[in-house]
Image (cartoon, rainbow, N blue to C red; front, side):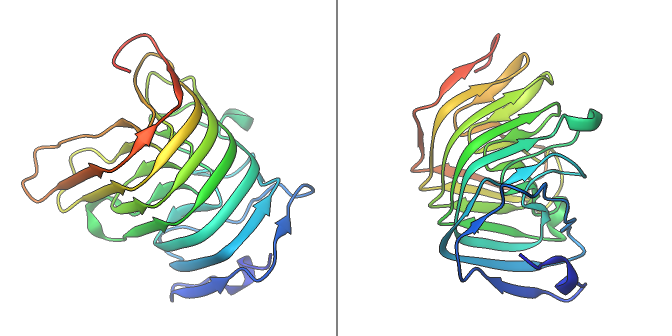
Length: 219
């Protein structure tokens, strides 16, 4: 799974040609908004994915580009290991960059496994959806967050109050359990900020959740 040596400030294109078992690997590759990437999973599966270290834990730390046609099973993302307190999710800790400087797309993806975090922004698929979209995605997950709020089955939260943000979650669903610290916990997204910027667009449509959601209030 040789991605690290190919990353640069110029967008790179990757395609998965075989299923991968990552049982012996703790994923530490730092893919951020300065290393744009388009990753096509070709409907293949990454099994036993584990990420317990680094920033914005997930397959792609900060997604500037796209992840499509990918399955991730038996995932274990722990955003609390080593005292971590940043957003996390199985595919990305952060999808897109606030203020529209980078855009992320996750489409036709399935994740199954567990995510544990201690941050405002912990989700089954994405921790924070900064400027981007999820379409035709599903998550069968266990999400737990010990921070006060912003815990979701698909997405923990969007980025609050930055101009020119486009956030879209469409044709997607979740199942499993979602447990947050205090409030703002949802089967699809924990927090969807309206913000006070007239240029912002937020859309959630044709989605459903069968997840069991646990929290004190605003769930």
